[in-house]
Image: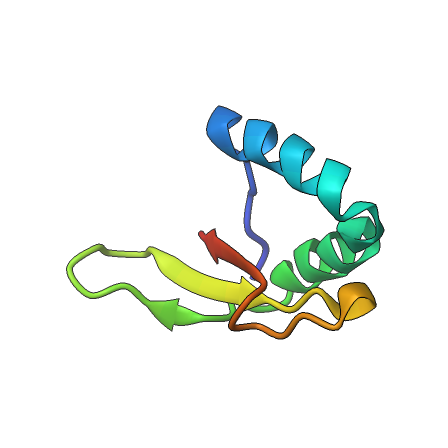
Length: 73
């Protein structure tokens, strides 16, 4: 199943600041977005139909999922 992903303006602003601090995560984000076309990862948020939350590890900086990025889809 293919999904249409449209980032919110607030996501784009926050991503700019994150990329200033962690420029090497750009490749990890591209891989993550590419995998989204195959399946929707993460946990469903109770009470909100269709919303999913997920965490991404920052591998180049040795930061695991707990301290990494949080994404709500």
